[in-house]
Amino acid sequence: MKEEAARCRIEHHAVLFALLAKHAMEACGDEGREAILAGMTAYGNERGMRMAQNALARQDERNTMTSQAYGEWKPDYEGQMEFGQIRTEPTLQTYISKCAWCDAWEKHHLTEYGKLYCVNVDNAVYQGFRSDLTCVHLSTSMSWGGEQCKFDWGHPISGEELQRKKAELGDSCIRDFNFHTAHLKYTISRFLINYLGEDGQEAVSRALQEYVDIFGQEYLDVLEGQYP
Image (spheres, rainbow, N blue to C red):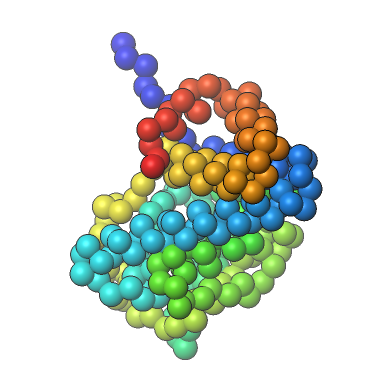
């Protein structure tokens, strides 16, 4: 019987990011932190640009509504995340009240490093989708001690139009977490090495070894060839 290939989940994605941040900061302190934040912004921009390409390929305008519709991931299972809309006018505001990334960081005692993911990822994705759009935090992120993550997306949307577009797209633009984890590994590693040189390379190597120690070699091997 053929063994089933490893399938990364949000937990793997979250932990890999936090480990890269941990080892970059342990090696290089504030310089490592700045490298992680720069890499995280680039990673978010790349996700947003890919979403924009999907929208344009279907001849959809790039706006706040389509930025919500063309998301590339979904929870691993029902109930893993809790999120929704606070309002749709005069600007769209959304919330997250249960987060699988936060749960993974807490489980592995990595919140101090994982929380750097939350500093700019939503805005970076949004600006990758269209550079003149801005997402603003309305609350302290849960990973930083807040009760909920709340965002203002700067423009109104039609909730009915968004639901129609999501129904039309289905899962056609969703990528699995083998892909997303490989993308994260590629972009963040590249920034750490470019910013920090040999120390960055060593931080990446240490992070990947710790990731393997936690999940097993197969969860690193499965990332090969996924991205780019």
